[in-house]
Image (cartoon, rainbow, N blue to C red; front, side, top):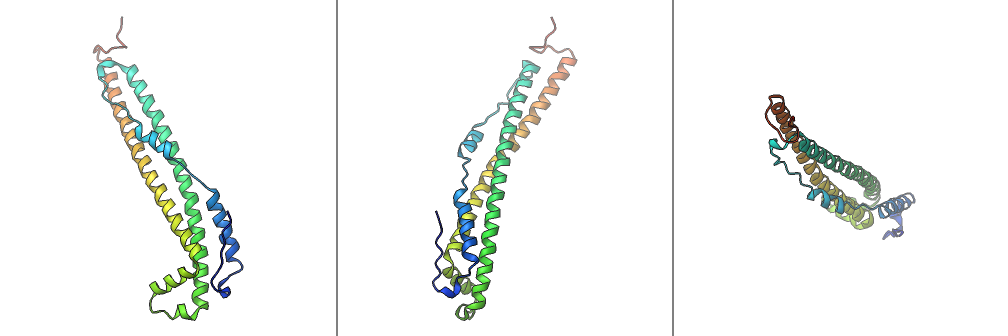
Length: 191
């Protein structure tokens, strides 16, 4: 899909602005992301920590390995989300740079806009002159908000898994201490 940028008045058409805007829109349109299934799977992860120390060290090792596998998966998805967020923030930076450059050019060349009483009125008039870049900026800001929200969800689960791993590790040390004190513990009882 090719963006058509048709200014209302030819005096506002900067020969460098239109191609740069079209390139940026092309990058944005061709880029997609979907973390829905990953986030749903992550939200469904549940590690039950109600293992009785009498169960033995083997069960703790299995639970710890399960928690660690889940933690690694969540950390991997979190990394992917952060990398994707970085790409979209880069797009927004490019859009902001294009907007500022064109905004400044319009403010310097249009006496009517420059004569408006306050900055809000000037900004509204500029946005009316270049709605494509204004809309693009808004869409990019919404995508970034979405990715930040996904990042928080995944980071929260990662923190919970980390705390679960610490709790299992403590329980495992207790079981190992019990074994060292010759308490009977299943699955490691001497014959």
